[in-house]
Length: 124
Length: 236
Image 1 (cartoon, chains in turn brown, orange):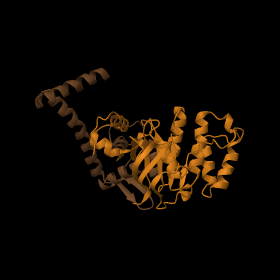
Image 2 (cartoon, one colour):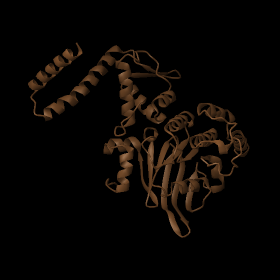
Image 3 (cartoon, rainbow over the protein chains, first blue to last red):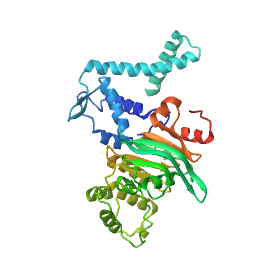
Image 4 (cartoon, chains in turn blue, green):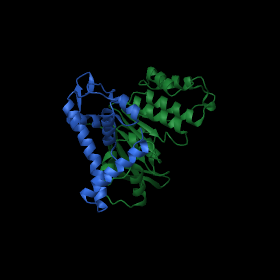
């Protein structure tokens, strides 16, 4: 995995794991690889992986079972909530950038509709 | 958290020239630390002072022990194999390490040799630069110590060997040991560093956690390092 050196690595590890969960590579109840294995796979520091996993445990996305390892939560509403959060985070960025171009909310919605229509045509 | 290394008021002069002046540096256990600085900044000298091979004024405590003669048993340093003849086979060098260092773990060495794809029947003189560096890394990591000092392990070697060496560092560094990696080219190792220590103007110019640099300044480790050398980041 390629990291952006300007962004804290623990944050990028979290995003990577969120992504794996959203795309179904990691399913509810799945066991995560051991910390050191994850560090080797991602070419990062063990401490940094631990920090990322620690935060995800606090967030309730992962569950740590003593002596067994870390597992993706089976709490479906929590995962739905996470997905909503990730979508909003992406939209916030787009929204702020379009606002900075002096678009009104209505114009943003219209632009987004046009954009989606165009993309559909391209893909057909 | 305990300290694996505590340096206080360290000064080192060579031929009337000050190489290091008034260095204070404390490292905690379990970290990977990048020791960054220009060629000639004093990175290798600092490592040699820590191992006890060079002597300056001030105190250096490794695992709380400030007797220089004891340091070699706490510290595994990447020696450049200069003491061996070029017709010595790699497995002979390993046997020598096994005799000299009681903490040399033959099992670990075998695992490292397999992982790094080293042919131990080769003579030192027949090794490419990348292969030689892999041998040095395998010998250094096969020792079970609290402090590992890797002196520019990536200089002048191909990118595949670099990647292998980085992976072996992550795989074999004991959880409670600290590893110091010196380099003047930081981009490739930046993701594995907990902290960076920057040597400039004969002293420790900055010592900071990597993710704190990214969070506080919004820049990468390499950009931070370069900015300190150009003097464009103000800091306390």
